[in-house]
Image (cartoon, rainbow, N blue to C red; front, side, top):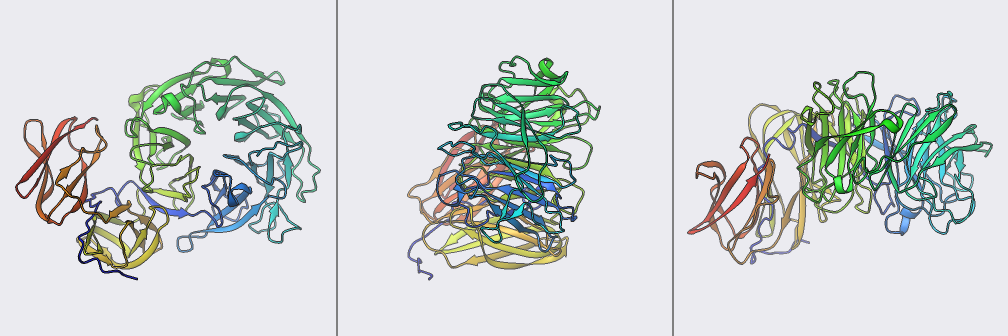
Length: 624
């Protein structure tokens, strides 16, 4: 029910003009895969860009995660999403819960794909994390094999729960009681060259932190006839990362030590730890690649902890491995840390791209791309480019955006970037497409609140096959609902302006975004805009944030009365370099404006706000 707030003046917290950073940006959000009901925590891990059942449709697999020890998150569950084309999009086509085998789970399982028994049927290998009490024969590894009957199913039917599926094989790793063993990352490979795939894994808790296992077969009927062998276990310390290169495996501990393990002369050999080689360690980011296409593999690692904002290159074999710092991220704030990573050739230009997620970043939820430029020494940081390809998916500053995948999940040749969160943010899997296969260039997007009504205004400079815009609203900045649809202009090279008035609002905070839809079903989202129904009591100009900044920052100000507002930026010698607001009549309220200094040199700048006969100034620093 709409209430009348005409006696109170409510104004906008967030009103910004955005040029070339929304639908026209290099990466656009083209899809979201929400958490299936009744999950109450974020995903625990994802695998993307595979077609395990061989039906020609791309698949994404995800597992749930226990974060708060309550509800559905405690029961291990796995999901299969399949891409059904532009119009149908991503659909949940299979799911399984294994509470009858593992009643309760903990946090952050490993998830891998492969064919452990080499029978031609692909498998999902999943390690739900043990939950106290740690009983004898506690299952820590389950394997779901493709049914092979042309369906979307994996595993074997659950006779006790029709419609549910159980794994083809399972294993405890260590059958003893009172063992807390937590595999964190797993990789299927054949490092010993015996033509039998092994499961290599690192653990973040247990009597060892590196293991190698094999299995006799993965029975199609799940009859328990498989025999597992722990071929090797060793290493100490808490491990959050693992890389495999040839007959070498490298475990990266949280203290920065790198533990080399090499299969040689018929056995695994552990070399002495390389102390502090990756300061602060790495969080599920290590990627084995061939950076310069010279047929020699390297490993890229995104630092975590004390070296959180650095990229490292591991070269060499076994105990001779070396680490070189090849890049530093300067755009995620002093508290920002990199979480998760994946590599691929996103734009199919023959150059390796590495993508990392973040935690506690400024801007929040920053997704970082690290690309080799194609020439020059791969150990020289000058030959790499670091960019932020997405940020601020939600209004929350919490969360660990740690599930990262670079994979081709649609119908074009380019790879996509997928990311999601791994704690309690209830975040979807977000899909970014390169070079914006959404043909709309949005030149501005703003929101204003007057007399209890929210007015959204936006403009486009060009449109190609634009079906229109969904106006979406949220009360928490996470879960959005469509409140209206505004038709697009189809194909046009002229400027078009659009608006929508939302009358179904009350006192409180609201979040808005636009979902642009192409005629063939492709879509993308704008950034989120927050509206706060409050009125300031004085004329204020706040310090820009972040500061120092590169290349953009936010300037917030408040008006206690209706005023003609002017906001301009000057260099240190008094020359005007930007006009952000020019004599615009604004009602009392709180505003914020984004200033992009992409074309300006590093230095100190002054921003000056005038409203009526009042003037305020402040300084900010651009640091490139």
